[in-house]
Image (cartoon, rainbow, N blue to C red; front, side, top):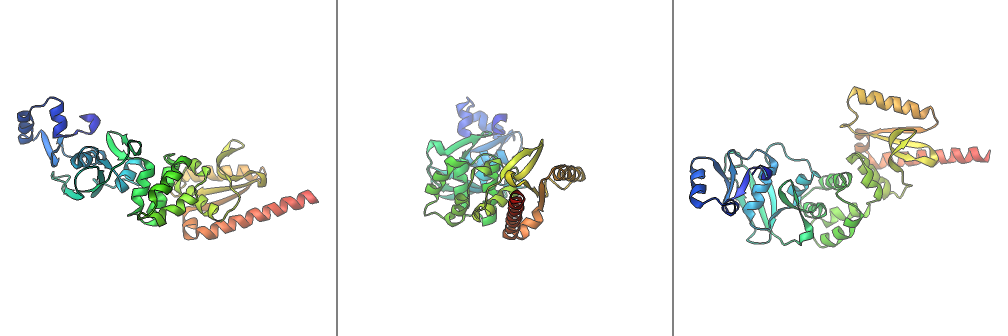
Length: 308
């Protein structure tokens, strides 16, 4: 049972050869703990999100999968909650739309929200023993309840993790049609560019979305210059943009390495621009227009040098 996070449905136990009397005896003596109707955890209460997600899909019936926010959390596109999730979104091809409340001490504050939905086999996956919808479909389902900021984060994380690419665009456009959340997801789909598959952070992806929206010349993303990797590069102009997110650029050692790399590149003629997360979040459009102006000035300087 360890592969399935020590969670099993009663029918699974019976299929493995456990007799009804043995299962009932284990329930009475506490070896099996009921977490949802017909679903049990062996030897311990629910201890992880993956165990909670598996229990939810088993309770929803055959063919049930995680969907919406829960699927995004399992894929890593949305940050997992601290502690067990308070709400788990599940889609099942059978039964009625309903809510189930956890029955064990650890699971008592969790609600499993089940909707009736049928998916084709190519729209579902299994990840770490948990059934869930594909990343693209998870975004479509998540869009209905997410804020614009939450959806943008999930979309960019999907790109960063290489869970979303060009082949998913047409599918998402088709699936989101006439659904709640379409107005939030469609603008993100319209701004997708291949460079999003090279981002290392949501900040880099957010910058590219705003940059593309203004139809500005695309940089190379996360490429090496003289052996040093940079975030964005306009090679012909010799301009480099470094986007300093809080997560990766806050410790003193990293800051020191950033400064050394910048001095190295500037000494060799490159213009290095640094933008922090705080600066960009405060005025994304303003930052993009400022960088665009720097590029235009750089172009004018290079043109003037060639003419002289």
